[in-house]
Length: 244
Image (tube, rainbow, N blue to C red; front, side):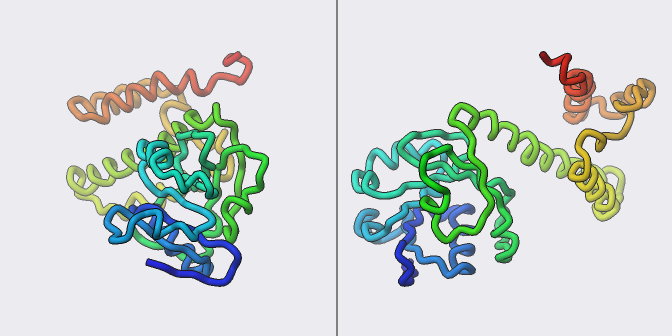
């Protein structure tokens, strides 16, 4: 697929997974030029993307380094990957801090997605011309820790909410919609003041309720998670001086 405009640069997009699909949508909304290649393409990689100034590797983390090293012509390009955990000094890392589903978003949503990028001497706009997103840079040594926090805060909470919704519907025979006001307020409270957002029996030191909750969860995989949080809470909520 080729889309080219007279804008002074041309993106080469490698991959056809979820991130690649969202990049294509964003490019189309911004009228940014691009060419796409994937392993299903009929043309060879180099002939497809040789004219591109910037190569975007929207491929799996474990494939990025090998893919770059196997294609010599990439060393003459600006090459960007989107992994949050990987640092590879020959490729610029720009991680979109967002949750991408299979549904496309509107332009306003795409523009607001923050990018967390590798610290380099070059400006973000030189690596990703045409992008209108906010961005912040972190050091290579912080990337794995940064991404682990993303996984915990986004992926793990999604797993928990999914299981809670399932139990509401299947075990309690309650519609999922009954959870939505609660869910929305939890995140509003976190955004407004994360230090004061937590409520419930852990905050109240309500051992009676905690024990009743654990008894109700016996035999359920959520039992171990609940119990782990009872141990995590006192450590996580020490004063800053106690962590030193």
